[in-house]
Length: 355
Image (cartoon, rainbow, N blue to C red; front, side, top):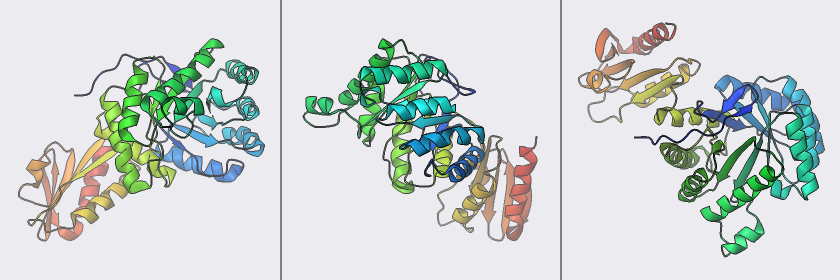
């Protein structure tokens, strides 16, 4: 059973609301050179189509900061500027109309530079995400924990940065606190959630390539969400960002925190299987990605037990030798030749999706 967390503060990011019990938001980050406007806009449009709700872009140079205004004009979802060290880029990003700044006040510079960024955020009514991870931990905090990254150190860093913003009268804050270690990440989020009421952006940093990164992210994000913690998530993969969005939704669906699009379930196969369940499941997943209506589709390899085992699915296919049974809510509605069963299943899915 999922733990229900006290509602966090509501923070507006563009037209979206984070926290306060609002639905958990799926984010991703562009992997283009931000100064390349066409390439960045193209990738954001692809992410929008995949269901990405907030997109973040790195701003490592003056050219990339200058590109933000035109990028913002051409997209429809909130844009976050990811800034490290150079406060001028943050000022330029705010002026360009971004919807949120991701900074660590502690690495921006002296107090006057931080104040300038805060004043810009206030003037443009945009929040700031304090983003702490194992790679950005301050030297003083590392030294305090004998040179190691710890959950306690990550929380200490986040709290220091939050206090800097609060000291300047700024409270439109979102916080992320990530590590590569799943247990450390979970512990850090548990600790920080007991100390603050700001919305929390959840993820596992440097999770890796799609295969292992998927497992690491699902374990970490899932464990945190199961504790009732988290208002927005990003699956950080060394892969196409579209995969980050897809997996983000899959994690939320697995935790029953969203019902977005088609969920394909399938049996693990055994000696009774007479059809290629793996191939069929992958084909149906690919062909149903564009459907936004929540539906559970089952692909079962046994015509004897399949409909019963997948009775909770909205619609499904149970394959036998040369035949396929199409069923709805456990009841067989059609029996078709094996060669026709994929199209027959798609017909049923389409008919349910338009209702």
